[in-house]
Amino acid sequence: MDVLVIANREDPESGYVGDALIARGAALSTAWREELASSSRLPQDADLVLSLGSDWHVYDPSVSPSVEREAAYLRAAIDAGTPVLGICFGAQVLAHALGGEVRADAGGGEIGWYVVESDDPTIPEGPYVQWHSDVFTVPPGAAELAHSSVGPQAFSYGSAFAVQFHPEVTPPVLERWARGGRSTLEQRGIDPEALVAEARHQASAARGRADALVEAFLTGEFTR
Image 1 (cartoon, rainbow, N blue to C red):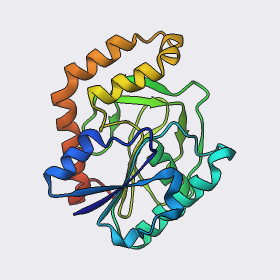
Image 2 (image 1 turned 120 degrees about the vertical axis):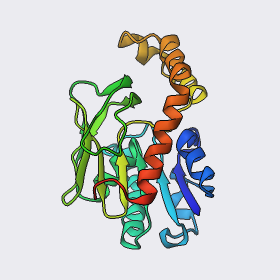
Image 3 (image 1 turned 180 degrees about the vertical axis):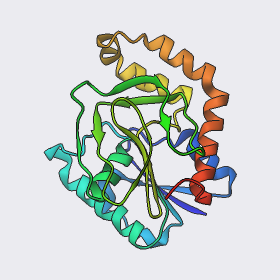
């Protein structure tokens, strides 16, 4: 299984999700989000496309050209029948590509460990790491599979599956995020050390949840 990962250069780790794909025989290659237009890869050249998170915003004019290129790429992948998995920003781009709306959440989004309410028994309810200030609407024709008080947390559309939360995050990745976002965490009253300690405590269970999500995605067990 040839998996094309779309990621920003400074945040390329596919973590537990990548591990679950590799355990199932996948070979991962990366296309940098900032340079996607220069990639010679086409959606139909990959067996699966994985779009990871980012600190970008879909509606930010300064990154609009890159966002629109990725949106067009994901639409082409879906049109070609290629499975697409979007995580956090990847889910937002996917929603945008399919006609949904992405906007800043008036309440500031979610940062920390959260349980999601799943409408599909194949999606574990968590807890999962959340780190986002934007929300999306479920695109026309898509099935909402999970939600929280903030908004939709998962949807499926044809060959695509999107999650707002971060099933892939490992303790080292969260430690790096917490280090870079320490001021944001402290402003919200979140203890960075406690956030990372919970990632270590949750490591085995988090890996299992990511594996279950990947299995459901690959086998099409979730509601389409």
